[in-house]
Structure formats: C-alpha cells, structure tokens
Length: 432
Image (cartoon, rainbow, N blue to C red; front, side):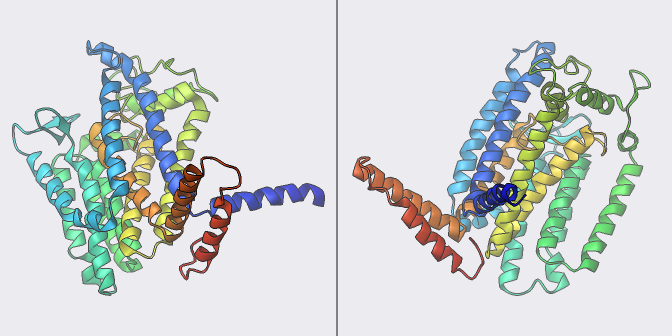
C-alpha cells in the first residue's frame, strides 16, 4: 500500500509545485479566456447559421461580426495588459463619464432604441452599442480607484466613506439602466457593487442593509412587471402548455441540454436552433453547446470559467496594491456573476435575465469591455513581484540563447530560476 501511495504523493507534490508557480495565474487567465473566446466563435457560427438564413443573410453573417469584434477585443486586451496601473487609474473617470453620457443618450428619441422590450441600445451610424455593458467596466475601474485612494488615507473604517460616493453613483448607473427595463444587467451591476464593498471590508450590518434594500427594490420591480413575473414562474419548467407559453424558451433550452447526452449530437447537428429555441446564438448559446457537444462540452466551459475565476481570485488575494485587489475582485465578480446568471437560466434554476455568457455568446457590445477587463487581469498578474521576476528570467534566458547561437551548455535558465525562487521566498508578502 505504501508503494502505491508514493507515486500519488509525488504526483500531488508536482501538481502543487506547478500550481504555486509565479506565472500560474497569468497563464490561467490568458489560456482560459482565449479558449472561451475561440470555442465561443465556433459555437456562434454553428448556432447562428439558421437564424442568418431565415433573415435572408449569408450563413456566416453573425460569425463574421463576432470575429471582427474578437479581433478588436484582442487589440484592446493587448493594450490593457501592457498599460501601467497608473494609466488604468487615470482612465477610470473618463470611462465612467463616457459610459454615463452614452446611457443618457439611450433615452434620447432617435438615438436610443429598444431590443426585446428593453430600451438599452444606441445607434451610432456604423455600429450599435449597448452602453450598459461599458457601465460595468466603468464601475469596476472607478470604484476600485475610489476605494484605493480612501484606503491609502485610512478612511474605509468609516461608514460614510464606504458608502459615499460609491453607492450613490452606482445607484445612478442602475437607475439609468432600469429606465430601459434591463433588470439582468442591473443585477450584475449590483453584484459588482456588493463585491467592491465586500473587498473594502464593509461591516456585516452595512452589507446586510444594502443587500436588504436591493432585495426589496428588486422584489418591487419584479412584482410590478408581468414580463418579469412570467420569467420568474418559468424556473424549473419542463413542459409546454402551447405555442404561446411564456416559458417556451426556458423549456426548449432544457430540451437542447437533455438531447445532448454525454458527447452531444455533433458540431452543427443541433435541432433546437432550427427555430425552436429563440436567441440560440446569444443568451441560450450554452444550451446549443450542450446539445452539440454534450455534457463533456458544457463541463469544459464550466471548467474554463472556474479556472478564470480561481486565477482572478489568486491575483486579488496575493497583491499588496489596494487598487489591484479591488479591480481584480470587481472584474471576477462581474464575469462570474454574469456566467452564473446566464447558465442558471439555461438550466432552469434562475429566471431568464437576458444577459449573454461572457466571452462566449454573440454580442459585440458585451465582448469588447469584457476582453478589456481580461487585459486588466493579465496586467495585474504580470505585475506580481514573483511573476515579474520569472518573466525577467525568461527574457534573459531567451536572449542568451539567441546570442549563443544555440550552442550546448550556454543555457543557464534553470540556475537563474532557482535564484529567483530564493528571492521570492524571502518576500514578506508570502508570494511564491
């Protein structure tokens, strides 16, 4: 028995060492976000072909738009990942002001227009935007900068400095979003606000009070809307009462997942996307992934989101910079809350909120700020002291290889790596 346990212990020890390496978070964020975006492009193409043909458009119409948005988003991600943290903080107020102006323009006749009953889009001639998606990024950056400055002045132990002006500005953004009727996005903004308050160390009483107010307001908004009440009643629905059933989309999402089996019906072989499942390439793309890729595919998507969430929490937990802690925590709260709300609705566990699956669903307005936020996480992961040392060692090692012309015996990267690890272990922050 002991001989059998030794290989398992060695395997666990190796896995732990690999997990604790300085660049683990960096590679997890980069790899999981890249794979989610790539797999999302594949599923957008598969799920949107029928819808495009029904609209007398080329079968790749939606895919080409999403691909272009992904390319632009990759540029934004690269820029954000290379920008210094001071510049990110300097952009917080301009981004917040721009997002608020765009959300006000949504209510201007002739500029803003409604989609699926929600007045939350604007037409800028060459592109249609949903400003509330940029409001998420604005709240994260501005809120993190505000709390970091108050943290440096040791003001966060006072209730008024925790609440003002963070909560009033957040409520103003929520009010602008709710003017258009988009409660799903408002829920995610509320989650970001709670995440920032929790990271700032809000007392339990204050946290519970804000949560109670949010729950009361949410209950009133749901109770006073027939559409939201109908969505709430569709939780757990598995049978249809007729073609006008308000739970049509929720039930067909369950049908798509149930018919996928273990490995799915095959890429492109979905039946539900032939008009039975509305929003197949947007809000319910996870259901099409389950039908075509099966349980294996949906678990892969869940695993990628779990890896991204773990890496973001690791970055937020290991840093000594308050802005990095608040911003990384805010971004992860945003992405994880939105993913849970979307997948929970598809699984019939939550009401349909009309929010896309981050990095995966079709939607240019949602993809661009999300990829910029991923660039933020990458920048934070690169700026960890241990990660900076590891990257510097690799750059020196690659430079020596080029200089030596590939001659054997010239690569001393392992020795430099050990030296770096000794330096990192001596840091008081406890980073490895």
